[in-house]
Length: 223
Ligand code: CA
Image 1: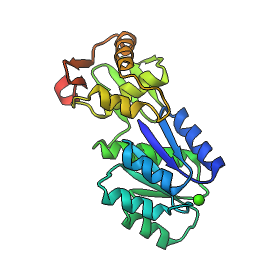
Image 2: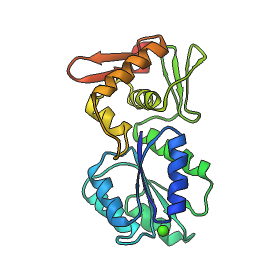
Image 3: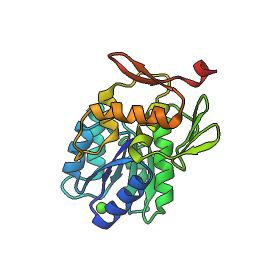
Image 4: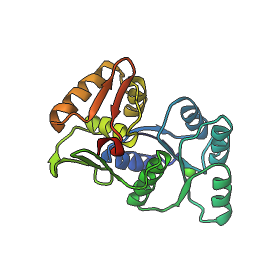
């Protein structure tokens, strides 16, 4: 899962990024509206966190431009001003949710989780496929109830596939949603992660669809 953070307060930006990274997300950051708009317009994000008061281009304009250009990722707006008119303007411009500063980091993380799972059409943070269970709230994976230790990249691969259960996900799509902008991407490494995941999970819930990508079976098919 890959998240964009657009926030000009450097300390706050770093705190949000650190919390997201600790939660298993790949994170890109922008410190002004122009940069944030550009990234959100050109890179595929699973969610964007957008401050409203930004230099260069204000948050509302960033959001309006994304939406006008068909960018549909969920957007969580941050506003320092606890004024109802800012919230209305943000939601009217296409925001999916908002948090008023100062906020608790846990609240931001919970809202990001909710936005991502809702965008994928899921009501819960728990994903199940056969004996494999993934708890997105705790970033935990179990097989038949036993905890499996995964690296953050392995976790991201599994989380993305389980979030999009039943759908074929191409290697390119996986790569785009696993790594931040600065990562030296090599789509062959996806194969390595899939191999390690299969080994660690000890069960083959990840199907290779030749020439197309990977798929985790949908819960109703697995039953
Ligand atoms: Ca600001």
